[in-house]
Length: 304
Image 1 (tube, rainbow, N blue to C red):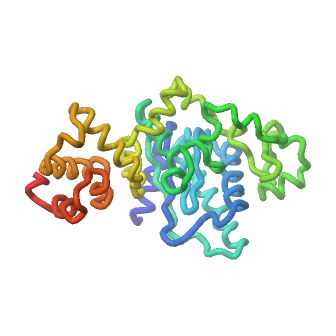
Image 2: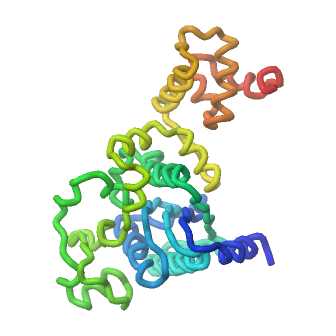
């Protein structure tokens, strides 16, 4: 039994609970090439609770990986992944794209308390905005667009029950009966998250829109923590890096202009370790030459 099989066997022993399911980031490949394929993957996610004893609490469909926050047993989460993998692989083959790698896999991250739940919601909601010029919650192929907003009421929708069985089979590429009350965006042919996502847990851990929005924008540590658990790259813009610098300095009551060159070097090492900021980003955030930051990050003097 290889490492992948051992990991899957372990997941299957886990009891019912909350889990963040994150699929592999496919280096050099894509699971979605155009809008139609993104829609297909969202529609596939909408079928999970009809097939398995899982509830979807959040999701984000990226071009080469997926994020889902589920409740269910470990075995049901594994089955949900296998189902999505099979459908996505079939879609890619039918559309003339390279199929998923043979070893395309996933990680299952247990969410064991309310603070971990907050961090995972924040991470999933921020995922698309980290690589696209789009604000958190403004992404069409993620569930966050329906949290703490009335905007979805402006969508022109139809009920699944108002469509013919033939239309639904074509739309979902499945003979599975779709609950008649589920809303669908008619132009996209996409199941909308308000029809299959349960937001109750999010509203419990974020009892106000202001708290949710603040953590969504400012909780950089949560993003780093979950990214490391998911095995994903950590990317911050220069604006975010400068905000991180200011937030860290506020804890000490100092300003950047108060810091000596030596202080800035120590801070660079701290921020590299804590937030994974690279030398180029630290240089532009701390106003220290990039070659100096690179030397400092390698220096034993500053890494004691």
